[in-house]
Image 1 (tube, one colour):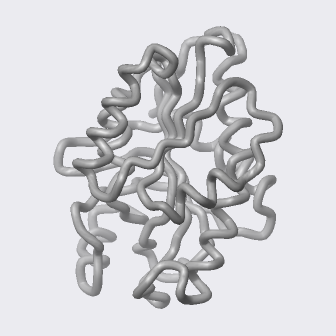
Image 2: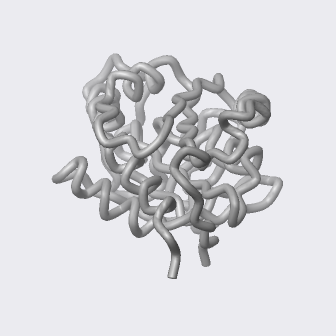
Length: 218
């Protein structure tokens, strides 16, 4: 079950898009901002859950972002067989050792991502957190928990945001490696470049998700 955000005017509902890596930040900064319904901040948090939690907590103290919707994004490792670099993952919830955080309107995000990046496969399910890069047998162990993908920052980002009826949260990740396509260094192989291009194209889908949160709820 997902939370239902309360309607609020656009000028009081900015969007905070959080990512960890410089290459992710570059992709998002170079993406189109056309159609953004309200102020958008792209925050580079740094790598790992502790860095993400600190950066998001600090950012949301700013009065401009105090009521911001928060969306965690960037690259991830796919866990399920058949996943490929450039596939998209929309979290139904994020998980880590501290618990889980439900995401708002994942179905709408799927719809908008299919429109923004036609031809790309979109997977939905739990997105789990890790404090290190996952390799080898760890993928199978995490898949057995029901998770479909893993990254190091999304769960911490959404936990720090404190997702609730007054702060919608979501997580969208681009698969950069998968069980049959393990990546050694981002950007040096075809899979990394494919994931970069997809991440650069997804901002319009984030804007449409955010725009829907600003509409009156019946």
